[in-house]
Every structure is written in C-alpha cells, then in structure tokens.
Length: 177
Image 1 (cartoon, rainbow, N blue to C red):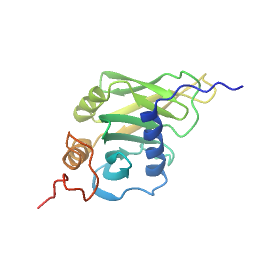
Image 2 (cartoon, rainbow, N blue to C red; image 1 turned 30 degrees about the vertical axis):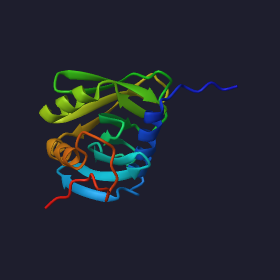
Image 3 (cartoon, rainbow, N blue to C red; image 1 turned 90 degrees about the horizontal axis):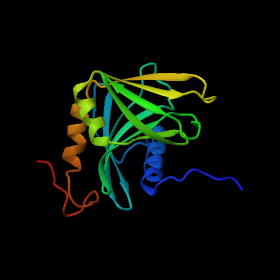
Image 4 (spheres, helix red, strand yellow; image 1 turned 30 degrees about the horizontal axis):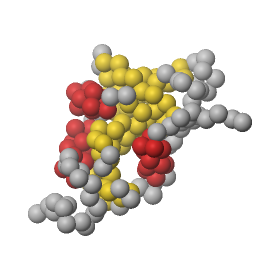
C-alpha cells in the first residue's frame, strides 16, 4: 500500500482553487488588474472566495502565487510550483531580508503564517521562492513582482470583508454604489 502525505481539507480546497485559476476558468468576477497582480472572486459551496494572484517573471504558466480570503480563513497564501515536490520539501519565500517558511503537499506550498507573508508582501518589491528541483539535489528559484500587491489585496479585502460566509447576490453582501 502506498502511504500518501496527510493533507488538510482546507489545503485540498486551496489546491483545487489554484487549479481553477491556473486553467483560466478563472473567476466569476474579476475585481481588477493591479500591475503584476490580478484580483478576482470564485464561488465555493461554503461561500465567496476572494483571491489575488501573480505569476513569476519569465512566467512559467504552471507556477502561481495566490493570496486568498475564504470563509474558513483569511490571508491564506499558496504557491503552485507546477511540479511534484519531494516529500517534506523545504520551500522558502524571501522578501527583502525576511525569510518565510512554507509547507508542501505535492506541487503546492502553503504559508505557515499567512498574515506574516501578507505583511512582508505589502512592504516588499519582489518575492523570491526557493524550492527543490524534482531530484531534491538542486534548488530552483522563481521571482515574483510585488508591484500592485497592496492594491490587489485591498480589492479582495473590500470584496470579502471579515465576517460571515456569503454568496454572490446574497442579502449580506455589500453592494458598491
């Protein structure tokens, strides 16, 4: 019997959302493009998910960095690497002098502390991701621009304010004038 790593239900939901974003079945509602970042929403059974995403410089189409507000939690940061990672792989995202730790589940890395990642992204210019290559002997690097991150983050925060789960068109959704 093959033993698979234990992956939390929220991590599986995030991985599924990243697949939707990556395949450009993109969003039910595009909130806007902000330099290197795009903000959008997506409906899940539990409510509206608001997310901002970007691709690395030199864009590999299968690599994606996403920050999400979901009904189950805010500031969820996920990185779809686009290749299977070795078991218990070390993935580090560096913004300026700040190193941020991510845990992995197959081809996706998740921030251990999303709030700290968001704070670093708001202050930084670039996020450099270091992850092992498939053979776990080399390290690969991707650089993501943080230009426009604060505006994209503000857009998803307006659309999905803290509080109860809601659905597009539900009575507790604030309409814009």
